[in-house]
Amino acid sequence: MASTGPSQLNSSSQAAADLSRPAVTLGEHLSHQLSEVCDAVGVSPPDGGSTRSLLDLLGPSAQRPLAAGPPSPSFVSDDHSPAEFSVSFPTGDAPTVRVVVEPGCATRSFAESARVGRRALEALAKRWSFSTEPVNRVDDLFFPATAQGPFALWCAMDLRKDRAPGVKVYVNPLCHGRGLSAQVTEEALTRFGFGRAWPALLEHAASRGPDSDEFLFFAIDVGDWQTRRVKVYIAHHGFTVTGAQAVSRLLPGGCTQRLGEFCHTVGDTEFFGRRPLVSCLSFTEWDMERPSGYTLHVPVRDYARDDRVTRNRAATALRRYGMDTGALDRALAAMTHRGPSEGVGLISYVSLVQSTRQPPRLTVYLSPEVYEVRPPQEPTPPLTDAYGQ
Image (cartoon, rainbow, N blue to C red; front, side, top):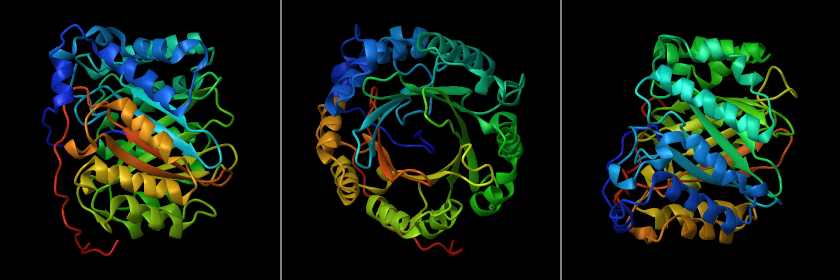
């Protein structure tokens, strides 16, 4: 998950140590972290392709020295690192690792970023033998000549043991301006056959308008997936747990009690008035009128003092589902040498995935902290939502 709001940052001792070695490049640093996290949770993608693919996605910015600072104000991670990692914990199965990258992070315009992103996607498609047709289907919609917004295209790789990665593409519903983001999202869903799902989505997940319920991403599965999805991400500014539970009712058979317990455990508040909660509604061929999955992303770093707290909350949620907290701790140790009480933001989000066809799973999102680390903070006391949402 990406950053969806500003953050205050400072340099940690680990970041300072890295920045004092100008020979270390962004590509080397991120590749090392990815390899270490994969080893920590037992993921060994075939032929070491994940590291090579990561460098391909980074393009020229892979050779950028860390001491030169971030290539751009990318919002993939809080410190403008153009990458983010996550570990997903399926119920009763081995964890998987995901990395998301902004290929065009070093470009100077939306149009150039889109071109670089498309070339990077084509390179992945050639390496892993998959079609980019689903992205081509909405090319004119998300890459217009006069595009706007903070990004053009992100690529993500889901890394599984002894299998080629699953690849996801994230594009920008704000590319025609905030006021047209709903129409862009509706048209994208329609092109994939899910137009009939739009009225209920708008009514239950985005009824407050684009300034409060912001269409953040439209995501498309390509590559090696058993069932391909398209997904709509919505950032809910000034939202409550009760509001999130109402959105989750779009999922047939969704458990609102489970969602509420998860949200309170991870966020420790009822009202999310700082960084917003983010809903993800996924659509598959199994149901053309309703979502087949609902994910709630809780921005835990803005509602905790430090990463000791965020780790403990994530571990509590994992234990409730019988999942491996040891894999989480190994992944955290692989990401950084700093102590968990020295900063907040190494764990950026924790999410709960509910699906009509699979058991729940949790995902913990990890910031590379390449350039800076947020200092520990006193979280804002819970507020009362005047609108009772």
